[in-house]
Image 1 (cartoon, helix red, strand yellow):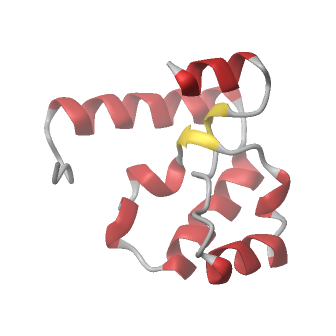
Image 2: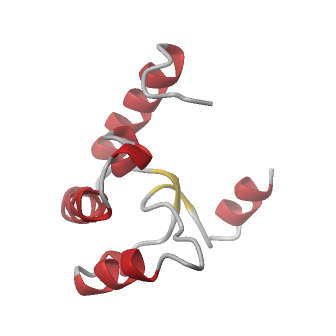
Length: 95
């Protein structure tokens, strides 16, 4: 419910880079270098449907850069469909 409120307030979006943790300076530095920090944080995103925590920080940022370049309603719809199919199929879901 809290995330929905942040979306309504305009602080967060459904799809975008997941917020970095306070101790992920390396991730934040790569995001700044590639302008990914200009995107609003999302509940889920392109990097999550492509490996979540199973991919390196560099790969995660590469997916986020791709999202930055391809950002559109249709791309968000694709992410939504992939999330749904992975959750229903329990693909890459560990907990």
